[in-house]
Length: 258
Ligand code: CAA
Image 1 (tube, rainbow, N blue to C red):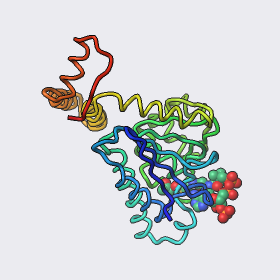
Image 2: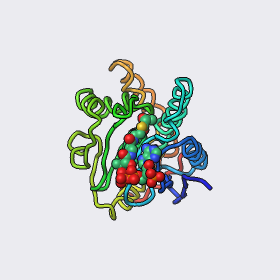
Image 3: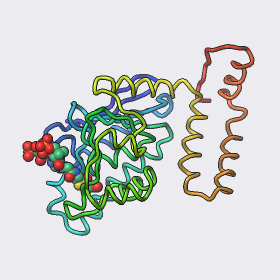
Image 4: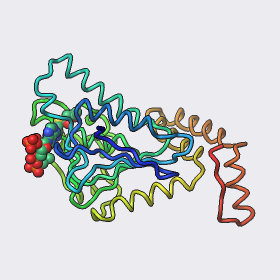
């Protein structure tokens, strides 16, 4: 039985973390299942992905503390790498990934949400990096991505104090883009995914690459990267289709990912 399910909804897909007995905590098996779920995503047809948690209480309550408790230094390093490799895969997936955070997003759960392109959450969501209270550092990218998303000041405060924050504070500091009711969470995420999927997939992919890779470059190199990716859109079917639709005053567009 898998602790992670994948549902193909045509233009977008939904990955659901589903290990309710441990509030969807990430042990090695769950990480393997998440990797297998990512393998299922057909990148030729699926244009956006949603990651959420099963139930109304928890997105992911972190890496599995019971599994980590007995690890040696070498095993701890390997466990960190296992999570990091999968989260980096999510971050660099060619298509946009939306985290629909439906409850606790603590430690590895907050980190999973941060490997997605952006986050929306339900009003009962709780975010935090409680690791220093457990005697460890965040280990699935938290020290790096939180600082990049909310800035080093807030990131350091959250990480050093191990204090959890609620949805309204997460919104205020820019960790999430939108807070909605639990009932509206998945419909809102699906609407966002479908809205992204309507646009030219090649262009959306180039935008993801440009923003992600550009942030690691100085401005001159970043602008060059944008020029290259901008240029690559031309002569594609979808560039012609998008521009012809405008000139023909046509609302319907047939983007084919070519
Ligand atoms: N690992 C393993 N089991 C977990 C877990 C975790 N991260 N989070 C919850 N569970 C388990 C609990 O042990 C409990 O199982 P049992 O009934 O078998 O004891 C079950 O899930 C339900 O949890 P609670 O009874 O604790 O539920 P609650 O509503 O009272 O509290 C909570 C919810 C505040 C989220 C609490 O469970 C909690 O604090 N969990 C741990 C959160 C945490 O510290 N996460 C960070 C982990 S370290 C990490 O992630 C490192 C990294 O960066 C890679």
